Image (cartoon, rainbow, N blue to C red; front, side, top):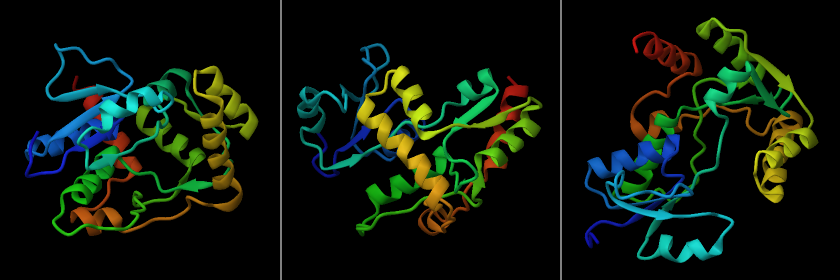
Length: 220
């Protein structure tokens, strides 16, 4: 173990932000432990991997051994699901969210974990625009040249869908409830300067993100 730099546990290590953060830390020679529900094999291992499941306390010990800092993530909407179904399901109604790219989240996380002076604060990370899911669907439809619709559903239906997909009921209830807060209280309708202030670079807009994704597909 590297005794000069802190060991960081990255949960959801195979996910969008976790994998990006791990790559940045490893590039700068910071030790990381990659944790997730995927059973990593020796073939694809490039570092310290460990199986971790929030709902199995028996996995906590190995994951936390010698760890001094942790990057925690929660699951988000799956791009492929949207492309396949042509729909975005949520219980947010017309509520708006400051959508932020995985790269920007990882960049802020990297500075938070490695800056010489501890941040000692909660960072609210957003993109440059606050948008409703209907506006997101309109943007994606235009860029993908494919009809994408936002289907507004109730909190109960959303919770049941997540449970049917395999998510524990307690966690599904929590996530579905967050959608209701967005709808009724506007809890995520905000734009911050966190990305620019912490990383020195402007945040990527949702339009730019999907535009880049579209151009990548066209050249594959």
